[in-house]
Image (cartoon, rainbow, N blue to C red; front, side, top):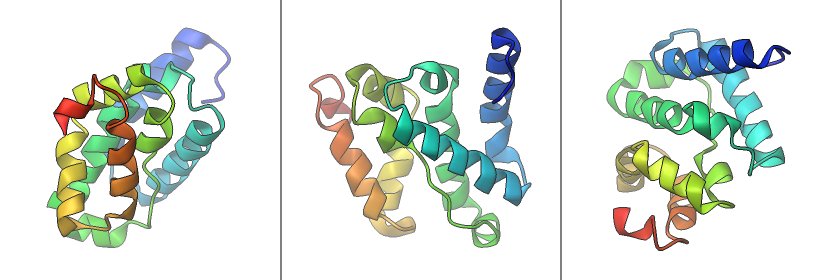
Length: 135
């Protein structure tokens, strides 16, 4: 993330987002997702991470947690910054919906895992006419 050459940086971030959900490096999950959450909170309107696949990555991580209970029990609590990005820009909400985050969030809401943040995130996704029908 600190790479100064923009194309190399973007390629590395995209690769990270693609590989992270399948990784068993638990410490990496916590470090990367904690950093992403802090970036999302500090710069919620920055287009870089949403354009590189952050929503697909987050949806895949939630799906993995729902399907692989052994993995879920080994991993520390992590922050998934879907709502941090979707609360400020309709285009990010649309990207999140297109990225497939609704089904895993709905599974969380059904009690498959903790659901408090799910309600908050789904609330953000209902704010715009373009994303409300997806719910």
